[in-house]
Amino acid sequence: MSLKKANILVIDDDTDVLTAVRLLLRTEVRDVTVEKNPENLPSLLAGQDFDLVLLDMNFNASINTGNEGIFWLKRIKELKPSVAVIMITAYGDIDLAVRSLKEGAADFVVKPWHNEKLLVTLDDVLKKTAQPKSGAAAKVSMGAKSTTMVGESEVMQDIFYKISKIAPTDANILILGENGTGKDLIASAIHEQSLRAEKPFIKVDVGALTESLFESELFGHKKGAFTDAREDRTGRFEAAHGGTLFLDEIGNISLQQQAKLLTVLQNRHITKLGTNQAVPVDIRLICATNLPLTELANENRFRKDLIYRINTVEITVPPLRKRKDDILLLAKHFARIYAAKYLKPNIQFATDALEKLRQYSFPGNVRELQYAIERAIIMADAQEIEAKDLLFSPLEMPVQETSEDEDMKLSTMEKNTILRVIDKHSGNITKAAKELGLTRTALYRRLSKYDI
Image (tube, rainbow, N blue to C red):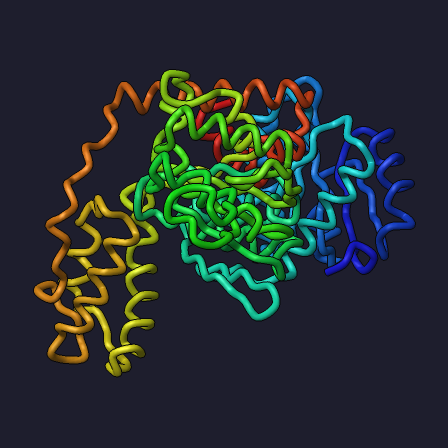
């Protein structure tokens, strides 16, 4: 539903707030009703259909706990479950506002607010309530190309949102994650949603390039530049001109290779081996590595100035064992693909097979799951995959889980980062979420998780 067609009810005991909201909304919505006394909520909801309610958290200055707002939120949800509710709160009561999300609120706004921010929040909530819930698979398409990413876990929904925000920009992206988590799939999705989608997408496994091949492969060479250079060669940078260059396993290149790469990124031109002529290049750079950022930050291994060049925005892809909600979803996704490929339609999973998938840690991540399902489809004798059909790769070693102390340290770092960014933006949740690369809802969940 559009904002222009909405009927909105505003409940606040501050007459100045009611006046300000009424003046703001009277030309932006179909109808706005204001009410000072929340006791009149039942009769108002019974007498008129509202699309959205703006509800204050506090109605009694002597109490000022926010419990009044929670009480009336629950009451609205009892009387009209379909009505979206946005809570109005002060910055100091953000924890109460986060609690309201658990009770069914669609969002909250912190006062004093900017009018533009309030209108955007109202519009976003109305659009979300009007749309059916999104499916578990996010299909990203541009022209004739498409990349399907599957995941219903919170962390994957955050990644889908982040891709949608950063893809249309030319920001350099660093994708972090273990082998087999799908970093190349994310790189493809970013390119397909970008303004360069109709231009080349060039992938290079730079970690596999030797010192002697690095410059020739990336920058190209002229005939006779070195032994065996029997013809001119176009490098990957030049081949990706106008499009996207994806450098996989960037963490495995030497310091000497890093220096050469940094020079090209700074100057935006390449010089082919065997010539002194500079060739300008226009590329969008995406890099990926299985190394954690803490290891990349070690200057004995990786140049910090290069990290800053390639890491305008980073995306961390979690291992499959950290998003178990997606295992069965991915298994069924791969089963449909390989059942069609090997002419075994309507194949299903037996209960013991599903349980075996749930219990396995998948050290090889999504790639290992994919291969396991393909083998199972091939080996299955009936229209049902049983536990005995699922054989996991002996090549993969079980991954030791992060210790509790390490988890606590990571949680503390995340909490401190969230606090710093929220303080930087003076409590503006939208701006803070944008800088952190999260949706507002995901940020609210973290605020609740860390009791902020």
